[in-house]
Length: 157
Image (cartoon, rainbow, N blue to C red; front, side, top):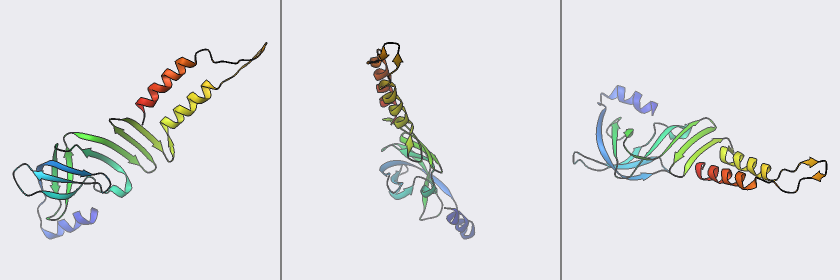
């Protein structure tokens, strides 16, 4: 992207923006196809991020929503602003935060907050204590921990 901006500065091409409706989203290629609301021709392969290989901030636009498409040159366009979205993510090196209708994902390298929480609840429910009469045999409030565990399961992704 940096090279494209530098090349643009040397070509004399003018940067301009169009408001478009999203007709398809490819979350693997990090692109979308759009149709300008001014009746212009469909535009294919519009980049969702300036540099999708190194993380950063990503908003996945919802199909049929409106987006602002900035043209870097006649062949290259990027989404500059979105209306409705289906997901958002933010990544800094090996740490990622993601938000979707299914919940939140907080991940650092291979560890996720959900996995940590589920491991914690499993350990709590497996606790035993030594008493004057021997070890305990049952967690009396296990149902309460299971209820909280299920709330975390539906909240976190």
